[in-house]
Amino acid sequence: MPRSLLQPTLALLVRLTLVMALSLPLRAMAQDLAPPEGEVLLTVSGEITQTNVGATAQFDRRLLESMQPVTIATTTIWTDGVQQFTGIPLIRLMRAVGASGHRLKATAINDYAVDIPSSDWVENGPIVAYLRNGAPMSVRDKGPLWIVYPYDTNPAYQGEVIYARSIWQLDRIIVE
Image (cartoon, rainbow, N blue to C red; front, side, top):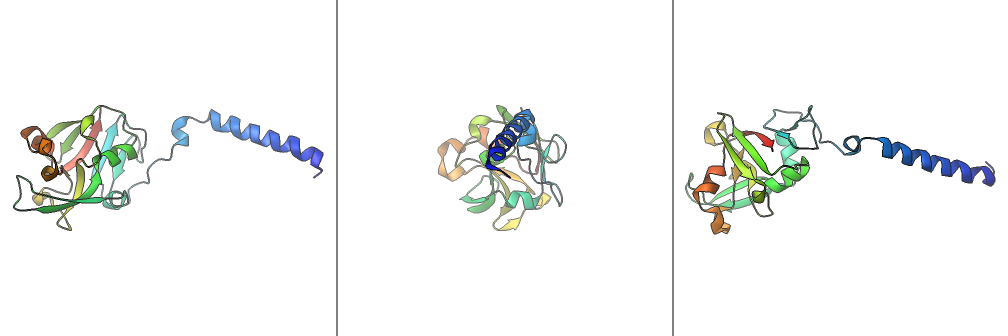
């Protein structure tokens, strides 16, 4: 192609690409989460922008494990001795779903529910644990998911309010 035709053609392609990109809804441009392939352990809904099943973000163990889990060692008022919990930092989970609310309504399998304010979604804060001492937690053993704070590292995490937010058998979160 002659150079004289190449310049205008390239400029037109750039303009068309820009117009098409700007005309797409922002949600379509965002990369949604991969869909779960196994048993869904957690469903997040509400004020979120990243979804994978309808208007929800659903997580199986594989998806949770792919989100750079951390392990914390801490005592709890419900267990004996120091326990090792592995899971996803709550702040990382909220970022992954594009949470924009000010609190979470966390609900357990038995419909027990607690509110967790966004001020708790901090670095070195609570995790959504799926392993305890290296093993998956059964429903009988407070699993499969448990919101665990690093109780031993911060005196602010050693009180009734935080203990009440430490919901086990977690299966749903609504971002409000």
